[in-house]
Length: 138
Image (cartoon, rainbow, N blue to C red; front, top):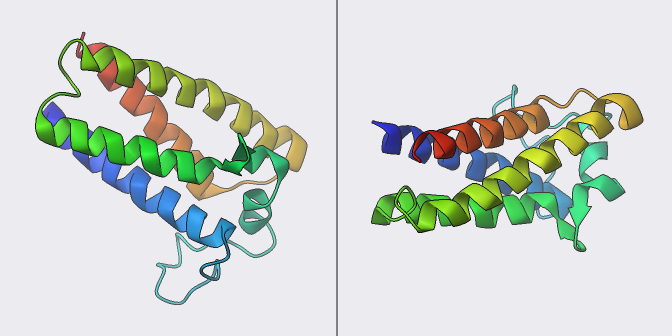
């Protein structure tokens, strides 16, 4: 049961971060017609977020790091290792870092950029839930 929840959240996170990465690297338009309307990045608000300095850590888009994290979590859960010791501690450390980064990025969205980006907040919420779930496996 908990594995299914991990897989679902990591898959949603992977899809969202892949979309952000494709927009950040200009591989696709943020308002592509095949993207469901509730997910499309608004040209005047959400898209601006992708191109701010806060959207890059270590010189690469945050979403690209998110893709690596979600993919590693998906693989780890599918192999049965992610939720077992000692692997869970590594995943937990990365998840804790995503929660800290999410707090900073959420603050930046609301108070610095003054942008309400639903997909950004969705991604931050997913990271927080994944962290709590990983804690619960200890």
